[in-house]
Length: 394
Image (cartoon, rainbow, N blue to C red):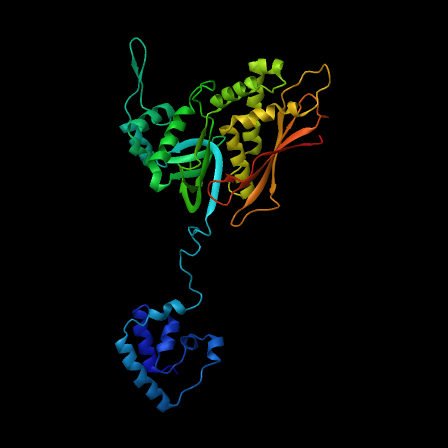
């Protein structure tokens, strides 16, 4: 039979938000609340108290309840209670770094947001005689980029996305401390992606470093994508045409180049470079979440930043003995592989990247390997050692 005093105190504690276990701890008879709810494990430890003992317990417990109305204080000691933020993924030790490569895109999420941009954007005037005014189109990247450049604060009203082959894989949010500089690069890339491919300012890709959050966002199409907080450091635009032009110049002006005849053919070198860059992107594309993928993406980004490495790869024939009477040729990219480094420094995550070049006209010749060691522990991967070169059997 339940003691009336216990039932009364339990009723009062329930109204104050006290857990059942706490009622048992503060109850007059010392009986755990689990026994009142029929929990067999707790009931086995319950011992009936003598009337005098119960009276003494009530007399000693009542003043403590009066002095401390907030009985809920010990709740933190109740086992099985986990804070809602414990598995949020926002803890610094649990964060997931991202280093992805793709094209920039935009989304409006709702028709109302899209129409608000259409309403605020000015009507573009096309040159001609006479000039022609055309309707606003928020889906036209050239119109949208022009509007955002004149009104940069509107950049926060869009959902910026990173796309692989027109498919959004992430929603991008700028790091709050440097949001303006991040959105400025987004706006420039959005406009530069619409330029002709032979324009020096043409941007084909972006490398995006950031932290993957536990949040998602719903796009206008209904697709749900994860949100990445993008940092400014390591955010690069791939100006492909400018890179190709500088690499051609490096190949043609190398004093130690054995390819005088081939290097003189600018179209041949340009086509070889385009094949190299397309293979880097299309064959190795990934989400940039796992450490090996982030290492590969960083190595590919380095190829866009340093033309000397590309020139060395194309001129791999200079490391090979060339038979008499045979002209040297430009090498091509074979593959890029990644493996866990056999050694690493403390608080690091090191991976070895091997970039192999081969002679496309004679696959029996040795391949030249360029090896990099990359640490992907931080959001921005870093190279640990100088590039090593060696030959391997074909």
